[in-house]
Length: 542
Image (cartoon, rainbow, N blue to C red; front, side, top):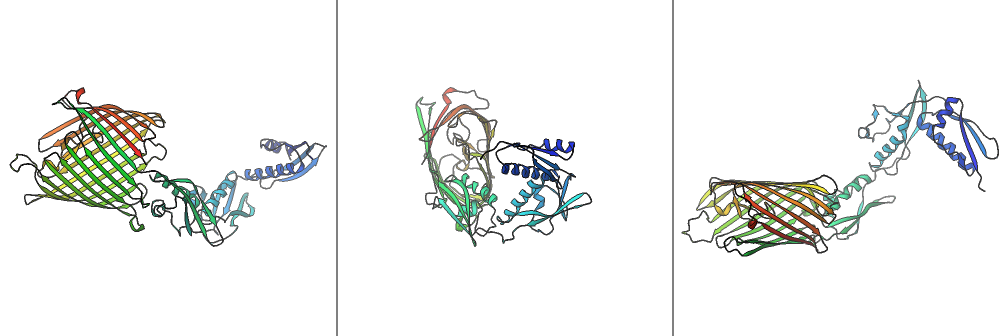
């Protein structure tokens, strides 16, 4: 039967009553058990405040609806000295608390929170069923001391088995190497949750929910919930411009296909075919195979064929082995073989020659993804390559050095506004140069407003800056501000280039549609509207 009861709590002195009144306690109750619970709660609060000697000296029902209890708070202690020398597994440095070789020194108000943190520390050492508590409270010379005890000593738990739910064929090596979770490791649930979130950075898989664990008497089984994501993509664009000589509209474009994880190996295969208005054709085949033999070592094979109208062809073949230090860092060692053939009449007065070259290279790659923004999935990217080798033509061998740099980062000003910056640079150092070995750039993936791969240089740099405004999660507009510097020692050319324009992108059911309008010019020439380039591309995920 419900009753309306009132609880009044007083102190042994007027000052103690003020202290008790400053503590919020429940005054209205429906039965006597509720009153008992309120008195226990207040007693617990007083202990946390340092009144560990308090007691209830009186508790009476003065009428049918009112209960009065009197507390004697006695002395207040500010600090607690906790002896911990019998527990060797604590890592107190990480908790940022005051301690010496024998005692942990805490303010009473921080005792419970610190005990919770210490219990968490013990659990992270593979002891999820072990709890710490305080015993043997003593008051010595106006100080309170206690012993820290382990309630139940057990052997540390280790991960005995990992079961993947959802995507049954998920490549297990990405659990072991990419997420760094392996059988035999000490069980640490906080660390496991943190590590499994790395799976969300993979383009072909995603976590369904946080991992779970099943404890039995003799084993610890970890369950990880993963789903497969569509990650193959088809990318293409159509470009058109007006030919200055014929005054006719000319088209160019490319097809780029990336196939990911179709064999459930984590592999990626890239196929590219590009044809532009300068009768240049490019074919590229690339395959990347991570975590070979369940190790951090991967391999990358690349074949690139370039044909310049009826002038020359160049075939590049490369093999790189890489070590993946973490989800973001890779280091490559590789070899590249190149062969170029002059298709012109042997009597032509050009710097195009048949040659062969070999380069040995090292490359560092850093990639930081953005798992939230679907329009800009990569937030930071860095790729640095250094190569040393030689080129042979007409039975003459010449030492060469090559280097390239590609850096980009998105600076988020707020939820809708961001600035994208990219720096790309490359250089080829040699005693002499051939036209068919020079670096080629220009177009939608470098300095916009110029024809694809139309700029020749032995050294160049490009700065891309875009101000982006995101109208909603699937649409953004942006500016185009591209600046480049180049050197071409064959033509004794040093040039500065500028490309300006605007663009927008829309994420549709068919894929990501991009439209860019850019106009390019050299430093000392004016902008010409007829030279403007329009680039239309769409990336479809399947």
